Image (cartoon, rainbow, N blue to C red; front, side, top):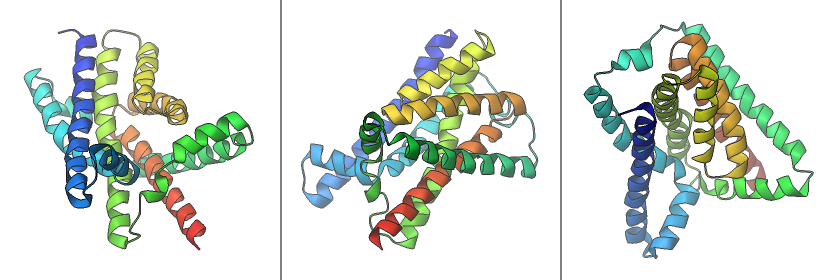
Length: 240
């Protein structure tokens, strides 16, 4: 099987695991709230999107590990590669935090244009429900899922597997652009797609420069953690 087919297989596992996770939560919501499947899906996507991705990781990672095992590829080769000092990992995490805040600043300036205001409204729709019960336990759980579980899972799929496959049959720059396009399209939102494309380019560069998946993982974790905490602060200010 060539690299292109393996990319499709990895993407299929990633997307199908999300669909299965969504189905599990939708069925649970239908039973708890006695609503239709469409209403339950809307409620889950509005308030439990990180949970969907976290469950998808629990489903998808064992399948991906099995596929890699069948191909006789060492996970040390994919994930560990080169040891990274704790200071560098922390620097990557802080870089992710800063990148997210710079992004929000850029979006704030762009909102003066009607076109971007409409896109921004679509982008932020439903985020007010992410921490709906306001409890410390819920806040910590969402932070753990959004800030760490989801980004690590995405880095394994997009950088350790998909980017690696593309780089094995093309130049590194071509592979970087190709995986960035895939990463952007899979986010399913125009504004998210735009900055996801740029972020994917940076993450693949970090992967290559450090010869370790943990560098892009740390950046991605910082980026997502900053995004969640920033949204949480905005919600608290709005409720005050």
